[in-house]
Amino acid sequence: MKRTRLPRYVQRHRAGFRGRVSIDGVQHVTPVYDDPWQAHSAALLLQRERDVPVIDLESWTLVNAYNQVLSRVERTRSPGHVAWFKCQGTALFVYFEAQAPLHSLTHRVLQRFINERAQQTSAATAAHHYRALSMIFRHAIKNGWAGENPLTKVDLPRARKKAMDFFEPAELGKIVQRIEESGKPNARRDADLVLFLFYTGLRRTEAARVKVEDINLRSRIIHVEGKRGERTVTVADELMPVLRRLKGLKKRGVLFSDRPDYISLRLRRWSQRLNVPRLHAHALRHSFVFMLVDQLKLPINQVMDLAGHQRIETTQKYFHVKSSHRRRALRELRLPRPASGGSG
Image (cartoon, rainbow, N blue to C red; front, side, top):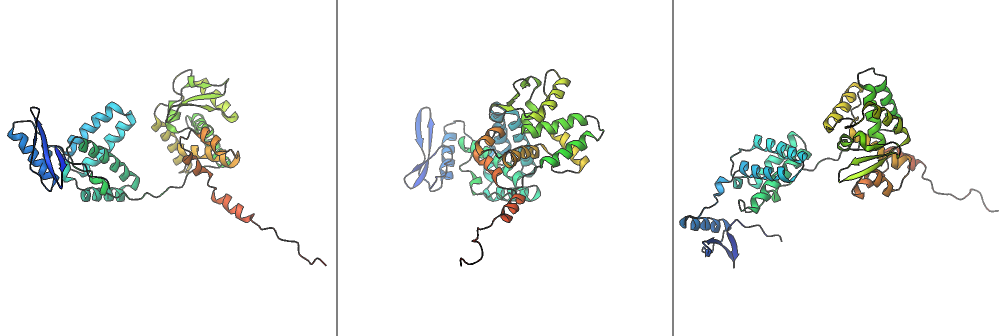
């Protein structure tokens, strides 16, 4: 059974707990208590009597802990992770008082918060809040501002699995044709964006990092800064004229935009104009992988490599046959029967 982490200055002693502090190089201990927090208070009192600076747990509020974790995140994590943590902080401080002491955030309080956020938004959003709070409490426990992580007693609501959005090649071809024939400004470029995402299977963040210099038409490869590092993408025959058009428009720099949100915005506008809610960057990526599986019948290791997946479990999801294929397979399911008639 996992032991609960003790408050700062507290150690287990026989059947109870005692405080232990170092003052001028000399170790001082408190009497033994049944409650670790009583031992913690006694240790703090012992330090105060010796005029040694102490940590007041009441002063360690949610906003103090959040700011310390944010400072660490800004030093060690990516800009995207920093933006994510700031977004979580905004949601936390709408619900909780910024000056709320950490020890007042019990598991019941946090469970109520997680449940309400899951009902107001989604289970996935509540899971993001849970993750941010976990970072805060882990930091607090490490520094002795909290004795245990109340989130270990909080249950996350289950998120419903969403069906993968994807397009059949013929369906996507009609969408591209409608974009080209719309007469809207940048329609040709947006149609090329759709084709580029479909024939490469890139994530929108990867597509935003692609520069004109990364495209080698002679070798028919694109150098991509992927999710876990650099990788190369082979250019399909149908994509060659698209890349020639795009390289003709720009000599250097990013191919489309260095902002993934801009790519999503362009697709969202066409999704609204054409009344195709499924038109988004990841649906085009799903379509690419499904084409490798269903039409080209590639083995799973090749699909994994072309899709840039890090885990084979991710690729396996695409090998679950679609409902139309399942019905067709069942129609063709027959047992061989012996020919009718006697042998004579």
